[in-house]
Length: 96
Image (cartoon, rainbow, N blue to C red; front, top):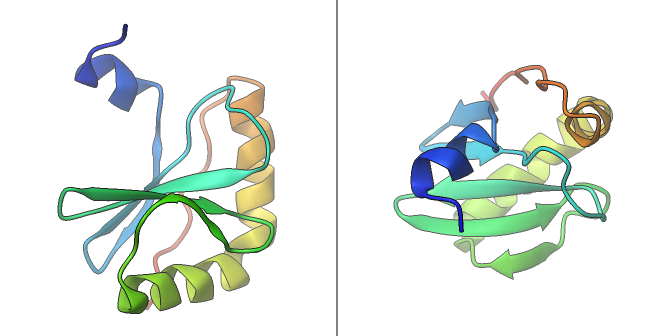
C-alpha cells in the first residue's frame, strides 16, 4: 500500500484555480479523467463527457470544472497520453 507522499508523487498537479486542485495519476485506467480536490473533498471527473465518476463536487465547483474542461479538453487528452506513458504532464492555465 502506498503512503500519502507516494500517492501525491504519482499524481502530478496540472492546474489550480479558485481553491480547486486538478491532478492526473501516471499510468491510470480508462476512461480519461482528472482528480479534483477542494477543501478535503475529492471527485474524479471524466474528461470526455464531464461526468463525475466518483466522489462529489458542489454545484458551483462542478460548473467551474465543466467550463475548464470544455476550454482545455484537447490539452487534457494530450496530458492523459503523457501520463499513460509515464511522462510528466504539462501545466494547464487556470480558469479565469
